[in-house]
Image (tube, rainbow, N blue to C red; front, top):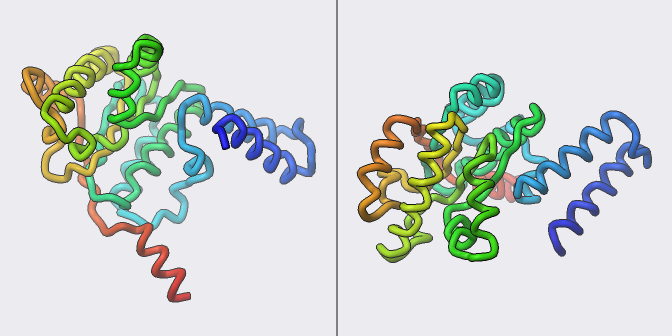
Amino acid sequence: MSIEKKKHYVKRKIIAEYGGSAHEPKCVKALKLIDLMAESNIPVGYWFSKMKGFKGSKKLEQVVKDYTTNINEKYDNGTSICLAGNQGTGKTMSSICILKAALKRNFSAYYTTASDIVAEMTNYESNSVTRKILRESDFLVIDELDSRFFPSDAQKELFSSIYESVFRFRAHNHLPTIICTNETDDILNVFYGAGVQSITSLNTQYLTVYPVVGTDFRKRLNNEDIVR
């Protein structure tokens, strides 16, 4: 099922929940958000995710609450953050909740992964469009910034050059970037080559790293379901 088809399927369900009236104000608002999330490349599985009832780290929950509550200020200051922790601790969901809050405030937003950035930036047909999106979106999430997706030094070096260019542009223009990584020891494990020193300087100056501790709460939830 294509994302476009899925979008229309979800929108039909929303309209049905509002009694079949697509013109009811709350329904119109919900449908608009669906369109915006699809345009922002937010995965369908996170369209209805909320921090309410979050089962992960309380510190992470507070970071997201502070960011979304003060999102205009975060945009003004170009506040960039990195959520670094093990898999299943809620980093992706939290970053997408920030994007959804941005969309609701009429900011542009975009979700992508580190490996997708490389794939699209090395494709002649998508290169220019992708570069524009990465550089100019009001809020950008780069997920899965993990060395496991770049097994060779050559791949790391290629990504490093792209990251340095994009993050430098965004940082200097006060555009917030949210990064999610499983590199709990050091985010620099992802980078390689001549640009590492420059990236280190950029990250030190413009990126605040928040360690996300805890076990895989998705597995914990599944275990709780089994117990019940």
